[in-house]
Image (tube, rainbow, N blue to C red; front, top):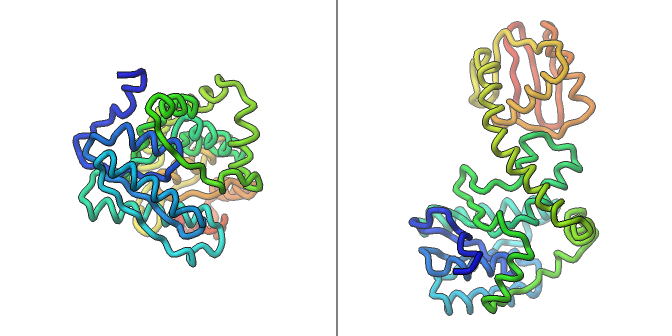
Length: 299
């Protein structure tokens, strides 16, 4: 076994659906786990003309490895605006539907350490807090796992060379008009390899610290909580006039499924929460309202 033998130390004793795009990372994942109890799926968004070539390569390799292959087609008409966000949601929904149909336990994606560094860099640039700095989670509550996260793109290139793995490059990844692609193609390659590791370490540290911080925040905010269904409601809750408590309250709300992009307007909300006056306030799509002793947050 090579030094890549520890790839996939996740318990693979249950059926897993591998999300395969045809790129380097996912083709390495397909090769590595082909002898486990797995299925492979390619999601065709109907946008790229060469997508059928990706599917052909994946199907050929799946037949070679003895892995059941499924191609999922998504109607391109749904991508009227905000393509990346809509495509991502549609892709995961399609994978979850197939996972349930097959009776699989997990959906595995091939995100690697360079993807993690890229994600953390982007979130830092946007001013993300502790929750955002967790980056790409190794395992999500909805049964999505990322078994390749500890390996760099260079590791995978070496693995592919060692095992004669074929892959295809997605032409859309070369479009530097997208900030994410500029980070991937122009900014991160200029950084030292230790910087990639440092960014990934920030994600690992945040993942360890986040649940501990939430436990402390729950002990403070939960005594005020009277409802969390439909909206979060707190009784006799007033924010202490101490710097930082507003940000902690925002972090706690994020754990309840209520989050928003931080703006200069946040300070106005925190100021209102320090007083007993009734008020209504909006931050993006989130509505805040206090009537007498009850403070509600609507998503």
